[in-house]
Amino acid sequence: MSYSDKVIDHYSNPRNVGTLDKKDPNVGTGLVGAPECGDVMRLQLKINPETQIIEEAKFKTFGCGSAIASSSLATEWIKGRTVSDALAIKNTDIVRELALPPVKIHCSVLAEDAIKAAITDWKQRHTEAVLAPAETAKA
Amino acid sequence: MAVKTPIYFDNHATTRCDPRVVEAMVPYLLEDFGNAASRNHAFGWAAEKGVDQARESIAKVIGATAKEIIFTSGATESNNLAIKGVAEMYREKGNHIITMVIEHKAVLDTCKRLEKQGYNVTYLPVQRDGRLDLAELEAAITPKTILISIMAANNEIGVIQDMEAIGKIAKKHKILFHTDAVQAFGKIPVDVNQWGVDLLSATAHKIYGPKGVGALYVRRRNPRVSLACQMDGGGHERGMRSGTLNVPGIVGFGKAAEIALAEMSSEGERLRKLRDRLNAGLFAKLDELYINGSMEHRLPNNLNISFAYVEGESLLMGINDIAVSSGSACTSATLEPSYVLKALGVGEDLAHTSIRFGLGRFNTEEEVDYVIDRMVETVVRLRDLSPLYEMAKEGVDLSKMEWVTH
Image (cartoon, each protein chain N blue to C red):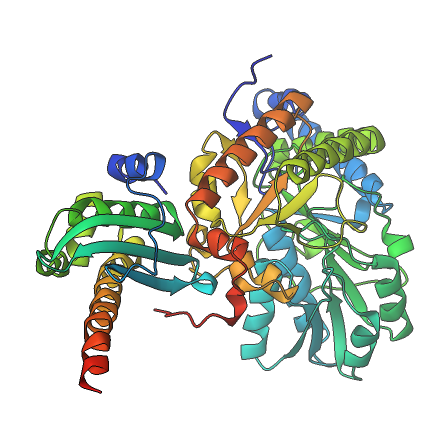
């Protein structure tokens, strides 16, 4: 199979590889895929609760070159954007940008899922962090 | 010394023609171009002489006689002819065939087709090391069993079966024994009488010969094996396989067989040393590597390793100046990881990370060292990128995680 230049570029020089502190209430982690299926993506976002801006985005991916490229591209796109902008990213945008062939569309779906999972996790954790002191005050 | 890239380490898929083979073939494309079936002129005689000599050389590799060699278009055809030919010919005697789950698709899919036609097929499992449990084989035999088809050496993991023992079981129950010996032929000692094999498939392009030519050994005595031909026509090859013989291909196959036999022990030893060097080099610099299949009962040129936490296709992409193959689903048309590794009990997660190295006649020690360096560098880089490697290092039991599958 031949890869597009953009896939090769992201595979060879992946952007924003790394790990954020998952205990930080402003960090949301999305872990999608399964080792049995041959791809697992972990996307971590650090989001400013005041501005709703994604200040940091880090990923690690186990998967084929297209999966690595999809997650690398996703971090590049969402960094500095607002949560609602990030949620508006569709897998088809990734397919188009990376020129993924049909057999690799699932890689882009996984990247979209990772964004959603990370934001859901952040919302949940952030709400809990905000609610917890309030409930203590009530008691 | 700088090695020349790309490097070819995929010799189980196919091999480069040996220049000596090409040299032997050329006259049969030019002056000796005749049809080996033309009995009435010199062109035909010359072609026939070349074919006879090749038949002799190929028979010698497996301890057979020249008359027992049938030429085909390749091992896929040989396997089809052997299994379908026996099934059809011995239909009165029974309709049960025994084979093994790690056979090549040319055997498995042939058996599947026969099942649709009313035959019963037992697909025996293999043990963790890739070898057949002989007690299970014997237990699977029924009064209706007409054929046992077990490959000599596997194309992915290079594991060699206990052929002599299987042959004894077949003989004891008076069942015909076919073997797909594509990977073993010319690589390790093969003797159809010692193994008790009645039918054997081989091909030229795995032993530095040309593509498009194969052979089927069909035993002529004790017992005399008959086959229903699958290709109708001029009645070539003792009526078992019609079609004008591919004379240059056959001559090339013969030359390749002759060289393989003459150089088998020295080349086998050299390849084993290279393979062991590759294995040792990788294990010295990387952790969490898993060898798939028995190391003891294995072709000298094969190595199959799972590089845990690194997906196979991404690994291939990183070593794009080295030709190897992977058991990863992403590299196959079916999007399923290797069924051979699955049959060994290798988890799908590890199957996705497997790489098959197939060394060959033209590989050098410098190439092995280059491959070690490139593999190590790429695996380290991709593990830095792998969430699984990070989690495993943190002590997370990945098998107990709940994964969101898609």
